[in-house]
Image (tube, rainbow, N blue to C red):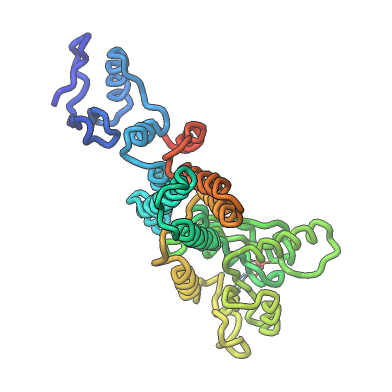
Length: 390
Ligand code: GDP
């Protein structure tokens, strides 16, 4: 339809307009949507006409905030929208979408409801000691509290997988100097992210690149060549490299295929999380002398890189796919830890009144995650993450 300026009568644009009446709209309020030709001139004219009618641009996250206040979303879902708009890889998109679908919220709501039931029963025991409450009520509450503490504890002990999936799974590239670590990082990142040079020990600090590895967000860290050095800066680089490698989820131990004896250096990181990579395969004939489990690649020619990427993606998938809803945010973790602590305190408390108080605290902590209880102070922080128009 033709959009016209109501004051001047000037034509603004040919547009599609959609009307979503409350309460079925995305925010729960009446919503009008204009689909216009998105040029600056059209937008300026349209916005000028609309603002004369007393309308204004939404603040970042305002639509989602209204949807939350109108009960269209809980806080966990609102955060999922922020994650969905920021998602860069398939795995991040899937996780955010699952969260938006309410799987994570349902888990927290479920715990919250069970807690509230336990709390209500305990308060009945306290308030009506003379009533004929079943004698086993208190024991049942304790059993349920124990079960909840165990479930929340398991959810917390997830090795931060959900948070890592949001922020990037850390893979550290380690190995002796000049093995081709920076070259491999470049090859994996498919751009010149780290400086390669033929002089040993040039990567003095930790260089990080965020990449999409087979659909998973990965933060690759190239570390300083592992060798003894008197150079203070290089030693500091080495210390950081070791710390990074320790903390990483997977490690690529890269060595020069011409020096198979260097593969022994990987013993510092035993276990399946360390992948052996024999680089510079273009410089040797065949795999003679290489450990059987080593991936033979050439960061120069790209030989074997596809196989290495597939193996890394397989290992990540084994760890991340098909598991129960994952904890995705530090905010949720903090609240769950508080809830967990309160449940444990409740179990140890000698008096029913104290047990009830701790159950109440646990319930409030859980409620803060989804936005059921006192969240006013949290809202600004959460919605500040949003971009305009969401
Ligand atoms: P780093 O010290 O382990 O980071 O090693 P670099 O990535 O800086 O590489 C050291 C040298 O080896 C550079 O001159 C690279 O060009 C060279 N290099 C790296 N990978 C390969 C490879 O696969 N084949 C060949 N022929 N040379 C490579």
